[in-house]
Image (cartoon, rainbow, N blue to C red; front, top):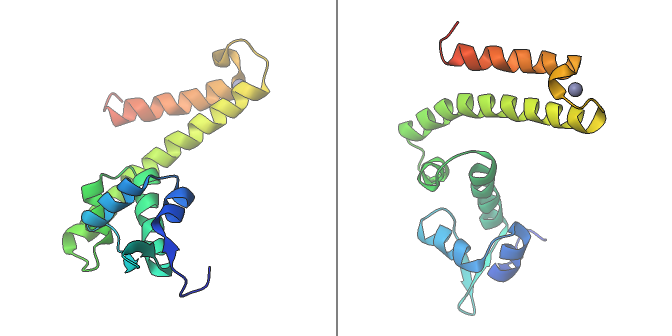
Length: 140
Ligand SMILES: [Zn+2]
């Protein structure tokens, strides 16, 4: 789309796999902005970029809507910065777990051993995961 094109809300909802009322709710909550044309909500390029930011935080960020609201506020606050800094370590841990799950699932698909525990590569991965779990709970 060109820089000054306006996209109707229905099309935007389709692109993002959302329903129109959900986008209206986001706007009511101050998470995004739209502009009216012929009385109907439309998104310009910046509105879409802002929505992409909100959806990324909601889908991949493990953040509540209130936290997202704080992070995307146009007036940045100290609290928002602290929240962002705290959340980086939460997401790093989550990304590490997701990466391990992905490796184990891929191996599940690839190898024909009946039991993943008897597979040397999976067992090594699981020993590492076990060490992380016990460290986290302070049992070491
Ligand atoms: Zn394996």
